[in-house]
Length: 243
Image (cartoon, helix red, strand yellow):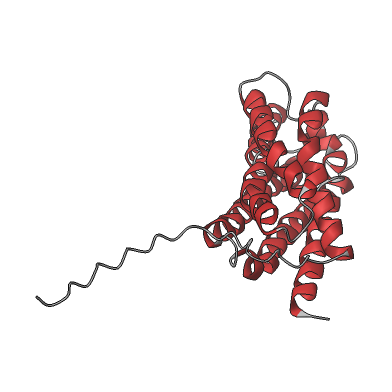
């Protein structure tokens, strides 16, 4: 197995893992999200721990995909390759911030429910869940669009995967930014049918590129189609002949 094939396989597996892990967390957080008395001891809390673990894995696999892809991407767009790693890292940081908020509510429930003032507990839990909501919007809600602007554009130009795959990412990026902006100003909720609809192009792009890298690997770039970030080389001054 060649180095490029190993890189594509690793990156594809990381991408698919990130996609799969990102799906069940919200369902596992149902109690802490939707029951204001959760912090007081209502309902089961086991889903919170599993949801936190799954989100941690989502963040770690996201960074893993970027690190695996970086040696390949920097050949075609070094600046965008660096941007891709930075965006993936920032997305993971936002995910971890949300996990810390949810686990803090879990700790309040375990340690203070039944002993502390109920109103104080519910107020503290609401504040922590507000942090979770905003970290979700700025992390998994927005960063995939910036990831696509860095990664999908390189894939489109290099033709390492069929062009229809990164086209989905390039089209989906501004759509997702618009949807996240609408959620920011209250047009619709982050977890709503409208938000899911506008996130579909990015979701299909991420799943498709992951599957293609696992199954097919990278294609051989077209000769003369190595689109790197432009580097301006100063013109060599003319040499004047001796008079």
